[in-house]
Length: 165
Length: 378
Image (cartoon, rainbow over all chains, first blue to last red; front, top):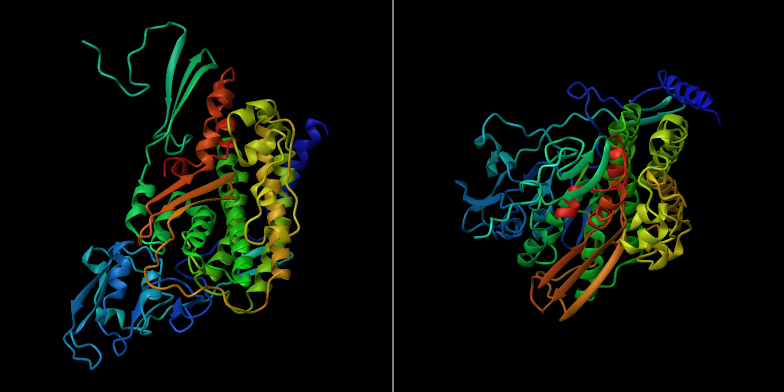
């Protein structure tokens, strides 16, 4: 193949793609779609349930204050600290629950694997930025709120290319 | 009194009017997180001294203070784009020490995750290779098409990079519902897309004139210097750990290895691209042969203790043979974890390749080595 033919072919291949669709997600207006409700773990079988590893969700009525999540996080990111909660729960005699610092969390989900009481799950919420360091620390009360996450874009493949439709 | 020892490149050298010493990096974007000290005579390189170590994190020492499960998140940090593959030898070795038998379905899913990760890494590397040769289309295309596979990994593992998916005992979670169909559709489209790179990049006369016959590594030298992976296969040695020492289920899958004879920068840049097509083939084959249901993870006792002894396992990563050596003394933590990384082995070839080349050819030779600085420093 001659040099001129090769260059023309390369240009031609590039020009053909002008008309094709692209992977551009207009992020704040449209957001990615995820499978499931976030990463969860079933201690009875020892296997997790697929989902995005985003912000945690804490179920106050299950948490016993056993600190297993905090112990697991000591070897990873030291993001979980146990704090006193004002309410009294029957199963939680010491009234302590995890507080998570998202400035340190690496979203590995090993704390979810460590919880034997179905108390800690992960959710699809990934927009956690804050103007201050203190804003990244989520108290047990904040973790109990189920986040509302908009999900509208999925990869669509057609003859005119793949795109976030 | 002897003069104090200075790091290389800072020592005052005898002035030579012809030879100039040039520091490429560590802040130069064309070098990655490392420094290459080159000495040039006019436009030609006469000596080269790669100086890695700027992103050393002590991963191996950290691994001695954590138990077998908690080692997973930090051990994948050296190569976040290839995080399944860097965990693979560690997980295989830890499983042998802990005496675990892995379910069949988990083995297949691991192979799929590992091959997807190989493609993700190679696309990222290809984007960098393209932009440093001044080919900005080859930066945009791989970076965009990588999204197809990142999306699959996100559905599978819950994270776009740093998946923490492999764990001693199997994998963290089973595939989501309907994953096989989505995976097949996106991998097929991905394969169609990477075939289009041929016209715009690999058969492009401008690329060929810049990379052909630059930085030639002969077959003998490639073996002597101990290079691995795409660098070794580009020099004509048919060596792939997936074929030679099959781990998990690679012996049941249908694929071939790609070998080129010339050993120049062009061959080294082409081999990973051909490997991606083989990866697509492996993924399709594994999806077909995979058991449709079953367990994916062995239930571990909390804080398991490894048997006394040592295990060395290695796998084929996106860059070459990646090994992990674990010594256990029947404690909760491993006594020693050693990662034997392909990036460092391939870097050794750099001084041999650059001598006699023009300075302008340095990016094409350096990046064709499939080198990832953070992995070499670990």
